[in-house]
Image 1 (cartoon, rainbow, N blue to C red):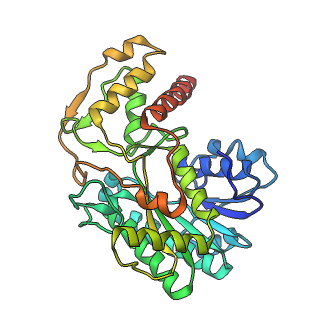
Image 2: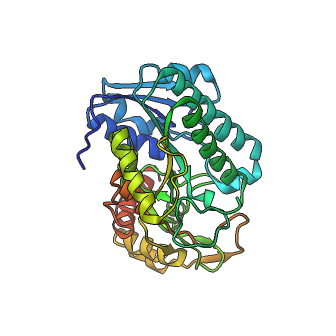
Length: 351
């Protein structure tokens, strides 16, 4: 997809990670100058192989918890795409202190550095975990429930800080509530691997994927290309156009516009479709069995439900479509097939 955002200097925090590195490649291909800030606690240098070949790319090894690193990275930037975080509900339950330190403390430092540097807008990774125990489906941005994990709390607090920085300092912020993003460069290894790469890895090894519960829990899985589209569209749109589109959206849903003309919104980034875990395993088997027919016969191992997990998640993308023109171009089925191709090549190369 051709993008209008070009000739800008941008910072991508967490740029060596799964989402950040894919975003960097697209920004560079579109003719932007890109700075990456990453401490490589979860990101990988190999994810930046393509970016490192560009003269318009700068890598800063640093930590968002260090304000001096943030200030150096954001100097002269027009936009900030904040992707750095410690993800995972189980990790936050095991170590809430580090998740809080990174996800809240680091985020505030990025915001303040961006404010000091005079950037036009900060687009940051929010999370669907913010919806907590709110029962309504699909999820709409202005209705959230009680948080079910320390991770969810950190991402909600980020939204509050972003709103406050917009109102107090005039820093434009847009939070993107990601719904179960998957695709190339998503790490299948480690204790906190996301479900799709973990299942893919297990199936390739002919090991039974472990499902927490009976497999009927469902998610709105979202392919990486759709997430990249949402991020860039949030930077492309002018303040005037965004304000007008938001005015129309709130008028249509008959809700008061919560912050007036201050730009501090949150938007869902998803496909607007629901897939349960049993369906997911079947789709992965289908995508991988073209490489090895025996994969289709691998059995599933069902275990107890995991604390902090939300049973079902489905997003409304009406607001993100109206506000910035977000329109997912890759379906879940198409994305799974693309991901299967990448994981087969990746894992076979490592074996």
